[in-house]
Amino acid sequence: MKRQFLIPMILGLLIVIGGAACGNPTGPMPTGVATPGSDGHYAVGQQAHIGTYVVTVKRVINRTDIDGVLPNDGMRFLVLDLVIQNLDTNNARMSPAAQFIVLDKSGTEFPMDGDVTPKTDLTSPSLPQTIPALGSIHGEIAFQVPANESNGFLLSFSPSFLMSLFSHGQTITFDLG
Image 1 (cartoon, rainbow, N blue to C red):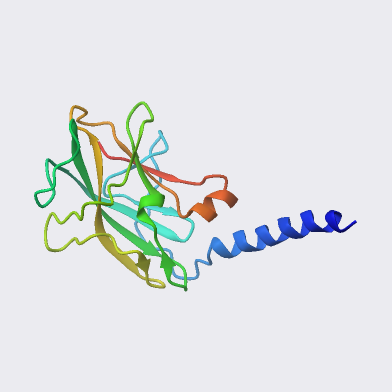
Image 2 (image 1 turned 30 degrees about the horizontal axis):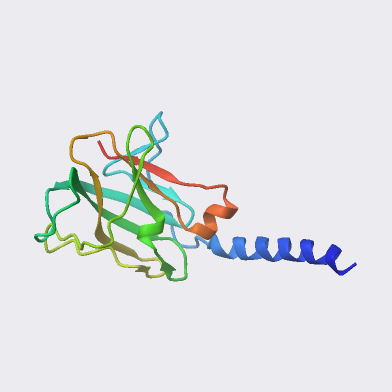
């Protein structure tokens, strides 16, 4: 008899947690938010809105090393300069390694390289992991991709692991050229 109530109670709790995780975008919607192209992808420089975030890939930088650190054999660094805006009235925690992934044309995934700290200039440090309420962060993340593939990479962003469970894997994708 107790089991009959346990499953609905757990499902109800998950729905409440999922709703809370989605956030409450109470801030003003920024101007300049783009719509994706016919392929469903955003371009570098466009602002993409998802959940309580507005994500912009400012630029894409190809590197053969980062501060003297070399990529694995046959690979190169793909450094992305990002701006992420939080539309929520609460601080947002980021986990870039879990939320960003680069894919090639065939769908092969290349995870973020957390062992390097890209600094292509003094204005773009590593991407911070906390976005202030109604604020934004600016920084860089790096991926190792095949050196012989010059273009066709995509960046996929999922607002959070928990949110993706409740929004059926909602993501945004940028065409990195």
